[in-house]
Picture 1 (cartoon, rainbow, N blue to C red):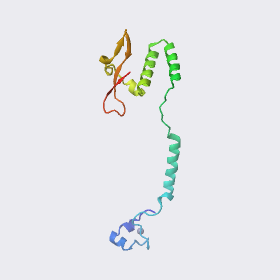
Picture 2 (cartoon, helix red, strand yellow):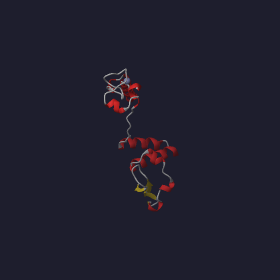
Picture 3 (spheres, rainbow, N blue to C red):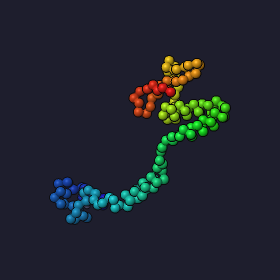
Picture 4 (cartoon, helix red, strand yellow):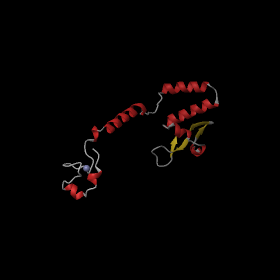
Length: 145
Ligand SMILES: [Zn+2]
């Protein structure tokens, strides 16, 4: 039950002594009282929250590829024989080997590659070093590819 303006107009000392307004003799309504869990407004809100959770709450997860799936993707992308497909494959294998998220791979710049740590033998790049700042890293860390 809601509080009463008449009861609230009395000094708190009188309320503590049991005084009330003329409408609520015997039990003052200086404060709200009752069980809120039984109020219609509360129960309507609970129903609304449950419906929202059921309709709008989607599970979020990351997709991890199995090695065979990655090989199939590689074969498909390389078979396209185009630069955009080769770039996509490069991004995928980079993300896969470095456990990077798509956003982290997309944000990589040429400056993030540490050229002086590259290992090149017989005109083939055998390893690369890149500077990455992960979600939990306090600063950029160097990762070997
Ligand atoms: Zn009252």
